[in-house]
Image 1: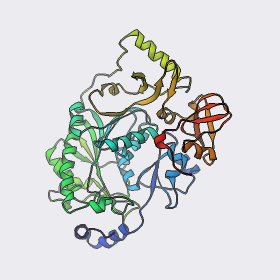
Image 2: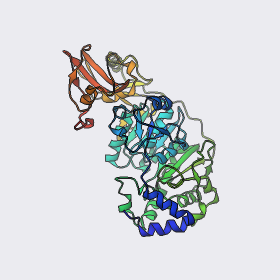
Image 3: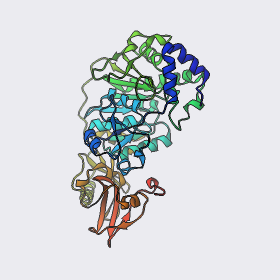
Image 4: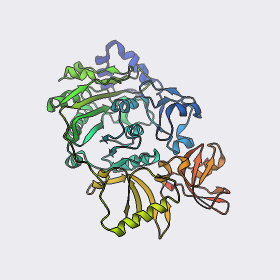
Length: 462
């Protein structure tokens, strides 16, 4: 498909003699990448056992290129959450965010989950990760990504930035704003509608929306905190221009040049913006003719000032002794299936049991919550039915009963299709694992593994 004429003319004006290489890159096949999930396995260890060839992505320690003929989305390791398929340039945002254990982090425009899952891998199950998506259908996809990757310290919300700003003033240590944009950087990505939907007026429309989102993010960032802004567009109005206008509105912010910034990233061009602030040169552009990836823009800003000391937050105690006894009994039922649980407290909502890892998770009333903490399962008259999320949150050796198979065992394919298969194991709930990566639950009885893989995740065909 030919590039839009107005887009070509603008990029020719901006890039000058570089434009032919840029246009040639957009006509070439796209680079393909995956990011290993360190909550499941370390990147180097995965690279040694991967079922397809991998090459490191220079700007993301967890990232790898994979060949065009590989199908990582069809491999059982994908279903187990061992990796997340992500466009390579997009991985730079997670690197610049540099999430740390124990931080409070908000991913404000989070679906489908690339930046959220990248941050979660670096947080190691500690701190608080709030992943928000304003679109309800995309929020459901986001929650599914969080579950598959085994993230226990996340809250998934379906909210507007305005409502979040009212609830969380000056609260987060870091906020990631991967802003909705005109999508020019994705023009060559297969199946992406950005090129068909693009018009010359779209960047200005997106820039106005980005300004509103950034202003709300500024309210939610604590003094001393960092704001990571990114787009997947080349339009200066949405990139250098958006940052320059933000700095005009918010003099309490300053640009940051991260010491860990990857060398493959190019400096931004504040001279391309009508209101260009020279400080914006500390931001980054990722060009498809300069690296193996799509077009991206990314920047790190710091909110000046010193954060106020906050009172230590603690979990709410059960209201009655009877409630505490019920939770203690429920924990024992869970521990009949697993040997240990992550740190946190148990809470029951109707017949569902959850593990909350941070006291703030108890303060989500009034918000549209799609997921909060780790769903453990359902309580059914002195018995416990484990949730799919629990199967992904723990390593294989934490389960009381494990059906350990190799990834190429035909029974794994049967399991992912929702079928039963022969298994001469101990009766009861059993974690089904492929090469040590847990895929989900089965229930063994009479030499047969009954299938409890969620229907919405089951594969069709072979």
